[in-house]
Length: 187
Image (cartoon, rainbow, N blue to C red):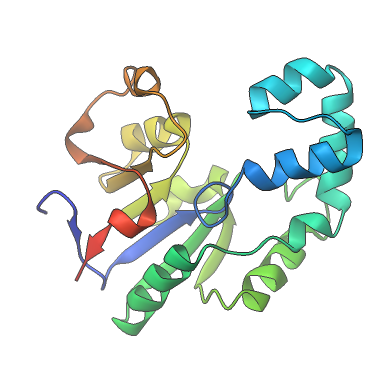
């Protein structure tokens, strides 16, 4: 597969937070609204809020705010192209469905409200069992885990990443680095 040219008629997997959405911006906006404090990154918020970070994250997961976030237009556009070409779309996430009984259902409803058509919504813990050809994610650690388990192509969105974050990646032959989804060329 040439660098950056991906088949639409394939099984694609999309991460949610940071791939379909502008995470962590939405989360950091929530933090600012509820604490009055501005943070530039999740790590800064964790450090600045200390033990209160986990409590605030828990409240966010229960709130309607998490389900009022807009899905990025470029992500929706790519998913629409994949579906039109009879490709399949898996939405995979680290959202803790097992800890929040209604989270998976609310996430599916939120995706539908944002007109994101998909074939499956799953936890990333079971993603290695799926037969996907391409996975898009913004987390280096997620790409690294899956890259060791699957023969697939991985697209790492690098918009908010520093080059040193990629240094640990092994077997970069099947990892494609893109600043954003709008840089992904598929036919």
